Image (cartoon, rainbow, N blue to C red; front, top):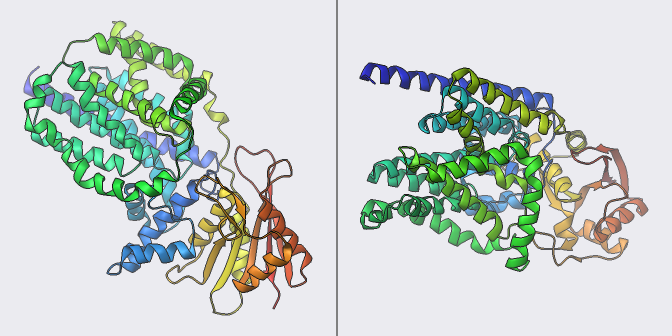
Length: 527
């Protein structure tokens, strides 16, 4: 190919990537609109309010707290809005979201960013596919499959770091692939920097550690061990991500389950095996296994790239099965681009005529959509919290700060806290301080283990409310067929028996994946 032809091809590839970025971002924005994301409160997942409040805390520190101690600022913020999770989760996602929140601190910013990350991920898939030698149509098809799988669509509805993690993992693989093709210090350091950013987004970014190892063995490049550049790849991880991991290790340990490792692995294999169909669709999984087998057998210019991608797969699976952080289908997210590429690759290589490739590619997308009705993903549908919070703020008397108490499960308490933080025009200092009943009226660890109620009688609870100067109490009451903590029942009994507390709001609080709505009650102290 002549230089001019190569330049035209590169420009065409870049134009295709930009088009995919724009179209996918717009499509995801439309999907979010269709499923009520833009009008929903925050609280569809137990972790969502924590991510939202922590992002807002970092944003407020940059906007109003620079020059002061970040640790002191974070502690004061947590005392006011006790859903700050920095330490339990690494800082990279919050740094990115805080940047976007800086000019306009509203929840809608999160979902615009999630749509953009979907577009960036699709663009990366197209670029990776083209460098694997796949046709433009096959590249686009792999991108469409990645974005249209139910895990990706669900994450686009939530304030979560998994989409950013997937983008960083795929970018790190790109840099390592270039190193494998031509070992250079620059590519090794870029891989290390991107890996450090991935680890500082989610600890599962440690999966990238297997990318160089699998490439070393798979390509039989033992000579790399003699190259200083090979070892330099780990330097940014050790220098940038290492200190944070050591600092937060005691905090994150609290979020680990205490199941024996062998049992955890076996239960994980069962959980993830039964989740494959709903998460990725079985036709895609079967084709991906075939494509992965073919990648292992290839000895060509694409071998370095294929081996690096397989290293990401092995690393991610290892983290899912060996790190006892619980089971969740969203942990599949870094795998989805690789699975889509492996599934489309055999069809693109075996079908010689372009028309057949186009037909097979679109047939594959249709199979995915028919196997899993992506349009059946429920609306986000978190509602009722914002109205209650706005009413409580409107009824607040005087200029002195108020003390609020919120009682509910992690989603309910988090929804009230996050909504309050975003509704308030000023948070530093805040006119309202929110307390969590699950922390004030009971004691548990991060996962709810070792539960012990602090008070056992209504009179004891009323005494706590007086002593803590609580003026407003939110009770997010689950339906009767759900389990209730003892402190929730005692609190509600205390509020209903006292003449000093008046029920000022009662209404439904809806959530996705829950057939019956909660009952959100707000009580205010009568002065």
